[in-house]
Length: 300
DNA sequence: GGCCAGGCTAGCA
DNA sequence: TGCTAGCATGGC
Image (cartoon, rainbow, N blue to C red; front, top):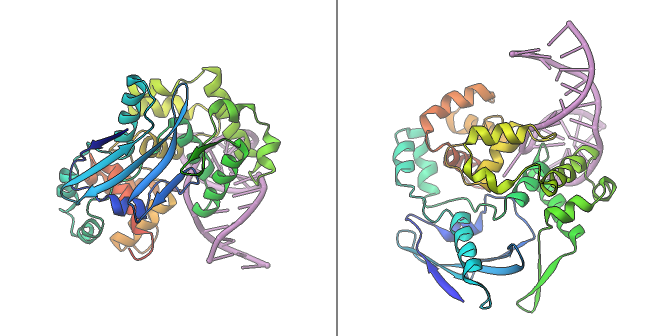
């Protein structure tokens, strides 16, 4: 089954694939030549592969979404909705660019990344686990740990004459011991944080889907009550997992470095300084954050 | 070898 | 309320 999605322009799918802002993960297959993104999607009762392919242009974009034929209408709706969310299909960036271009320091960054959006996580549990793993560690090692966690799950699905790794479910992770993650170079604390979070979800103490009906502040309060989840973690979860448009992880070392670079500051700005500067970015602080992170990569 | 990395907790004043 | 040591590992 193939259907078409029409994103709000500008939308640069090719650039999104080349530099996915969400951490690289072995559960995704990116084909740059075909401009396609494939991964397994965990529905309520089954796991299915979905492929999103880009077409059109940055200013007149179109995406095609492919998934198996033998699905119920309800499942198709869920796939459609989650895909739209993952690629921020409806988000119109025009006002973001207008807001940021008032500051000449941002002009060049915006111009270089025109049409760029983050690829969000498709699943809230997966998103939180990845953010917890990413705490404090350099991005590359964090990605390695995510890979090992996926390997530990040992779940794959047949796809394209090969196998597509599937990110483990909360039930799977909750069933593991801390020692299993320790054996994969997780620190004791990180192993506890990840597994305890999974157990909190499985126990029903936290219902992740309920978060969609809560404000950012309420979500912050609810999740930071859990051990191992602080403000930075929730902010990144709101960004990558929930796609909230106006969140700022001001304590983030990468954001601080990027702000220092972009604003030509003599030293790395502290959290309060970043929050103060970022007031001018509202209500687009999430996108400003994405672009700042992006500015740290390669030739930006 | 030493410092750093897309932090958090617990303990202390 | 605010500050800091300790955590633990790989990357550079």
